[in-house]
Length: 392
Image 1 (spheres, rainbow, N blue to C red):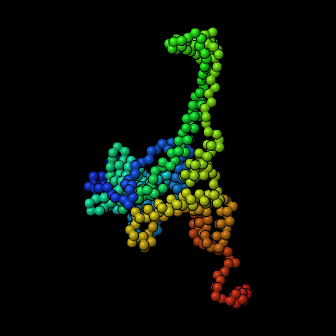
Image 2 (cartoon, helix red, strand yellow; image 1 turned 90 degrees about the vertical axis):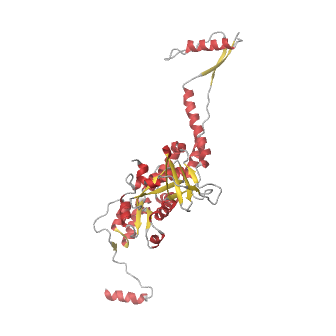
Image 3 (cartoon, one colour; image 1 turned 180 degrees about the vertical axis):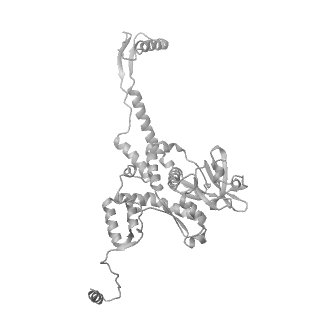
């Protein structure tokens, strides 16, 4: 039994009698996995890895009380093969590579959700049965196929414009990556050419092509046999020999920086984020622009997978959260903890979490400094002062 059988029960691997689903646009509701070559560029991989690593740190929060058995399983891990960090790391990587990330439910013998798994099919399309039921039909490597109801799956998209269901591909990045690839080829050619030399010369008293080739071979054999070092020798049949100075073109530092900046802007990741140098406001801006937006969409998608509309209306929800205060500098963290804890707005354990410290027993209580009092806005301030002086 392979992974396909563990994720998709046998009934979902059987061919279904279905026809193409008709979207509103002229583009069919299907996508084919985008070529993985762009992941081989170190600049692209670094940008995606930065997004995936920070997304993997998000914490899950299941609110409400519905489906307690499923809730218990998901609090531990999403499926038998991944931790939550691994789950969101791969989901975010697929999302950035394909502009689509599909999450399918792992169903138990009672057809209830017992886990979640991010899949990467070779192709995926929306089909519809004669009864009007919509399915997502997947084709995996080795021509393995499966289909599951669209309503049970979760689709996270980006750059969704032409397609009613899926996001567009990353073809917009082709021009930038083409320049980057040409530059790498030029650098490689320059290194290879630096280990060789070429000459040009005029040959005297030769008219036939075979004579020229014979003389070229003779010069090569006479001069290139000694690999430890040699002196090039030419006969008087060779006139005016000159070495060819090969100068391959490579982009300069400014042009290369512009190419890298285009990649960083495309994925919404700065060089500082890639090098883990973000703190304070810059770290908060990175979280809001690159991590929080994904967390919002992913939370909504998974919530719809796990809970019915009635269950959602009664407070059942799946959330991806992060302690944004952890992005602050140490001085800012200290100020937040002292000010918020003194006013009874944060517990000791919440302050310890900001510093990545474990909770302590009794640390979930709120504390406040003694000179703070509750104020009734409808009461006369002078009367309140008199009462306080009498108490003293």
